[in-house]
Length: 549
Ligand code: DGJ
Image 1 (tube, rainbow, N blue to C red):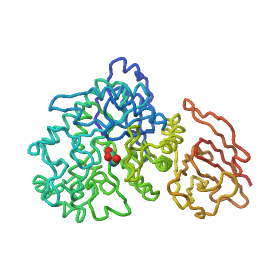
Image 2 (image 1 turned 90 degrees about the vertical axis):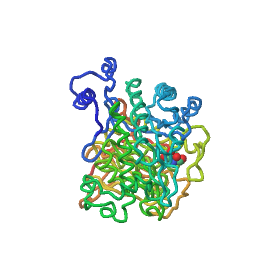
Image 3 (image 1 turned 60 degrees about the vertical axis):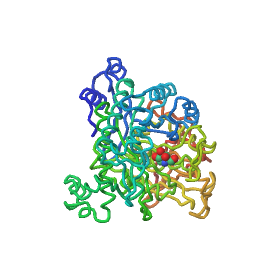
Image 4 (image 1 turned 120 degrees about the horizontal axis):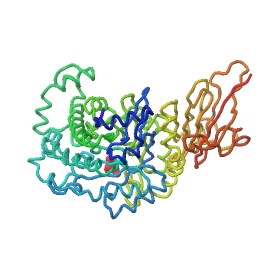
């Protein structure tokens, strides 16, 4: 758990327990810097983010890597608003923050925060410190040019790499010092917590081999696995090879990187105890690494256990998912949605068709979902499979986020306390089913909005045009909240008794206003006879079921 100041813990207790205490605005007015500081709550294996004392769902967007200048910020807000975000994820590069050793420049941080406030969005700051996608490209020149003081990782072939060694004591200390100054600045200048969450480093992991082979790393690799780690993972005590066998190199890399990130996070959290996480270049769990090191040792699905034990100052680790294949996407979400780890997707493709995965992620309890590369700076990652923020993408994300934005807090509250389920369309239009209490929920894809659905799998979908998904929460035994896009949701008795008929008793279209359900219209007749049909513009339904005999 992240350490907080005693005052902040007391403030959080007041909010949690609803006891008499200073309100958030009173506390801010009284000069309490960490008033109602954002935090992660956990219960029964579920998580939620609390911001301003209320549940908060991150409907995010991450800007392109080079969008960190006051001059280009105007190219962020219009797209962000079109998509309907409530949170912007933005990098804070070390080279910009500390261009000369000991000289800090907060101009950009201040501009970003004040513009975020003016645009009514919260911020997730991404600390691009010494480690960014396995390289050191965001470390200042005074770090990158001094390989003696700040040693690089060495590849398996003995060649120096673009990454810094996580065994460089001076490197970790310098990174920590800079990060600590950033967090101190937030404590001093952001009492209202416009910044709600911090990402520490970015997609750590080695690409030139499964681990660092620098002299310091070689030395450590010959040593023993820390007792606490071996014990927690039920491994035999001994060397890395003895304990982890074929996974020794990757596990060692994960331990070294997690230890480094944790130390940096702890230094920053001591200044301001915002929740912190780090992200993984998530690989295909069905085809591990295809023989090549894939950001080895980063918090990928196969290294989560090592990270959870070694980095207790991170609230969670999270996957960047750029493989928009439902089976792979779902499997990755399942890896990260653990009782000890909040599920959050800090990066996913900005292609319109990928927006449908928001239903799946929320159904699995995600506290946030953010496409990457969202701004109007005209950068496109298309050859890697994700394109620029073309109109279609903005519309596809916008349709879903703009429905969710006004109910983001309600959804975070409901999902924490009630069963949820999400479904997503694949290119075979495979029908998906779950059971909630006595009801079976089925989501169909490729069905017209009226009339019987096609036979399962009989209508193939264009893989570039996929938009289908659904999201269901069970509010009480016979009551559901349902939404979705380009899909049909059917609710029926899972196991009817002889002669028993399950029916829609009422289907209300509406939303939440100040936490209370408001019906806009009641759906019936054509809008219900063929179940609950969603087009490209989602809407929210409160559905009451009953059964008769
Ligand atoms: C994942 C990284 O975390 C991002 O910063 C960015 O480099 C994307 N990949 C690719 O555009």
